[in-house]
Image (cartoon, rainbow, N blue to C red; front, side):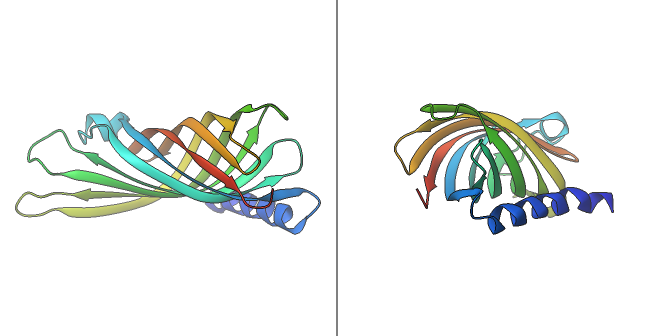
Length: 183
């Protein structure tokens, strides 16, 4: 039952936020990309090198103080150090995330976030015989960033996170844009 507690809590928060029009500030979408830096066993045992990743999702502000919730996805790829060349690992992840933005009406907002979800670790080998394997596991993420207001409907952001699942640890360093749909 414990493994369902965090998703159930995120679902309850999302339901409360979306069902309370007085509290919701409006939905938004975001897209970004950046570096995927492997850590721990993923780097040391698997031999993964720094790669790339893309992220995107939807979110909604909760209340007027800076809290928000998001549903987000990641797709990234890291090549392997060891021969044969061409071996790589793709990381596909989906998270329910909560966060808090500081700064009120300022043009620059620092923020923190944390979330839970699932991560698929897909190893692809080009050597003979070809090896392809996928392992899906529970994952969590936490991070911090800065959001820069570009106008009433758009923000530019930069952030660093830690994404952790058993045997797969990465530090994404991302930048991207947020478009507010109801402002």
